[in-house]
Length: 278
Image (tube, rainbow, N blue to C red; front, side, top):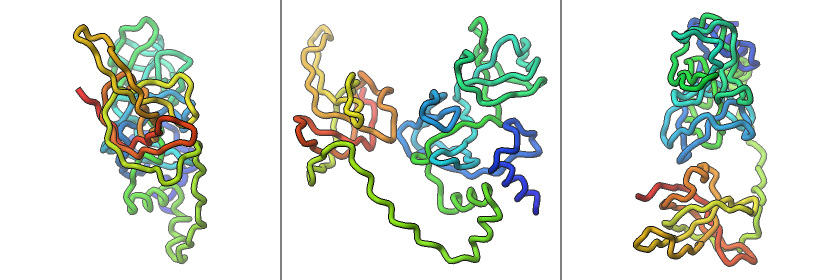
């Protein structure tokens, strides 16, 4: 087996350490963020905290796919912290130590860096923790739903993860996948009520949501003193491509699909694009 195949298989099964030497850099493909703002996490699960956001169009290095998640190179703006007692004043690691997604042991670890590693300190104002620049070997995770790979990149990633299977598939005719049943809607939407809309307003959090809509869109007016004079909710918001919490209490302009729900006075808007309005 060639060295490239060997490395690819080791990556696929997680046998290469997170912090490999420069001579053992794993293969990767390039992908592009397709969401307005995409959450990047330490581990492949929504239960883990966000370490940064990446904007639409940002290019990322993709190393492998696990279920519905891509393992990517940790972005330069990713939150990365180390306990202060484990590094010297120059950023040199004194003993093997975990790099974490936040300033405390409760935050998930990216992995362990060995003694002697040099870290670039960004902020050492805290008494016990230091914020450092993510190492090139650091990995993070993002939803596959919002990272676009070209067809060639998808094929290359399959080869990287499992070269022998990818090569054997070349000689076999493609198998048509079984039809995937349409997802069931979470709300009793009114058939034929879909409508493309462009709306402006303020994003407000729903304290008690439906399990589908997490926020509301409202038109807010103020008096001469800046106090709120009126607030009229015009619809409920659902968005798969961005975290609406970052837009809370902000004036925005959105485009999306508006649908009526049986028994509701106001429609639900599936947000496709959202921008701040000054």
